[in-house]
Image 1 (cartoon, rainbow, N blue to C red):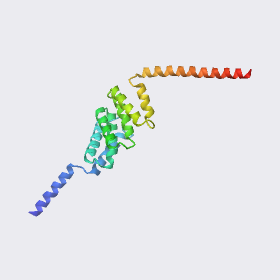
Image 2 (cartoon, one colour; image 1 turned 120 degrees about the vertical axis):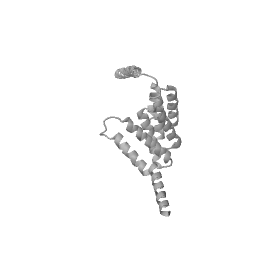
Image 3 (tube, rainbow, N blue to C red; image 1 turned 180 degrees about the horizontal axis):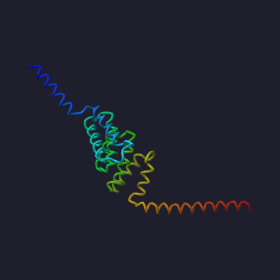
Image 4 (tube, one colour; image 1 turned 120 degrees about the horizontal axis):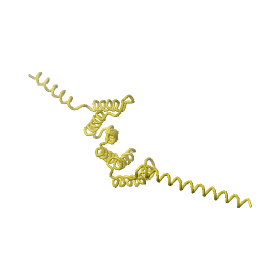
Length: 193
């Protein structure tokens, strides 16, 4: 009788452990999905594989919240959600990343991408402006700071409007250079006399 009880217990443990993959198995699955999705031999983007990878990241993050890989997988999941066009999930994951890892070097990137998503995917220019301004206040120099300022300057403008402004600025700059050269020439002629 003890023998049957022992076998039943071993089978129950095996079934339960088979239902809930180990950390190593989860990491192997994620690595395999990443390789298949991002392989140079892949012809085009596969949304089904991307969704599977995103689900695997989220599963790992919920099952192993304190694992060192959770930082990396949270950021990757946010980027992947942005890539597949799931803006709400991407913003939520970037928020989670910034909240949980505020001192991580990629927290800056997460905040910039959040503003970018509001601007380009959600099309909420007021929210994009708010996040870009928060970004500039928090990170006034360094990576993405000039990009955030430029994004603010061009927020809501069409490519045609930006090109027109660029051309106008180029003309103003050309006139300024021409005036400076003319002033230099006049200065040389007056000194020769």
